[in-house]
Length: 152
Image (cartoon, rainbow, N blue to C red; front, side, top):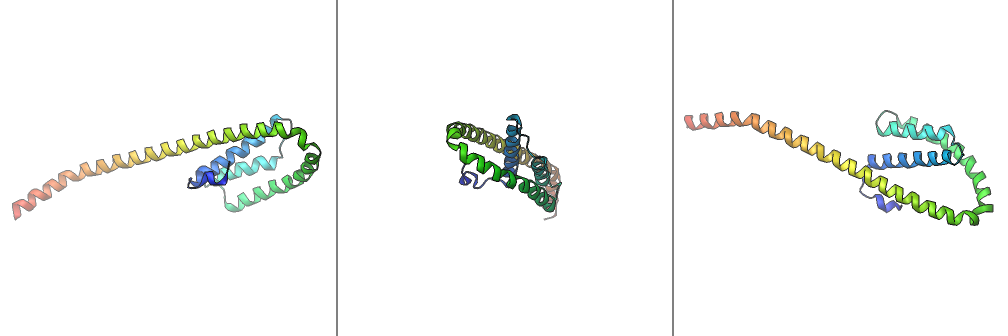
């Protein structure tokens, strides 16, 4: 997916999407027999708590740096290994990448649908409340009108 695909989307939806993609990647690594470092799982958990307002930015930074330090070591090893086997895996990875991008697009669409439904529900609740308040004010307004007509 391209960064321009995300212009104008609500930040909390994008943060949820990023967490979901990271969690999915960790699960795929586990399924492939490569157990992710616990700090990576924890970084995603802390990010989710941060999105919910239950973790501080400092906690998020700490978890992210902890996971990144481990990932940097793994990336160096992976780069050396990849140089030797890149061509053999190229076709398989491009197919997997297309499948992953397809999942990401569908998942983001689902998150946006959920966000839209939440907004519609909120607007409906606010409209209902506005109608209730208007109905409560109607008798007072009628009384004021009758009183004004009677006095003038």
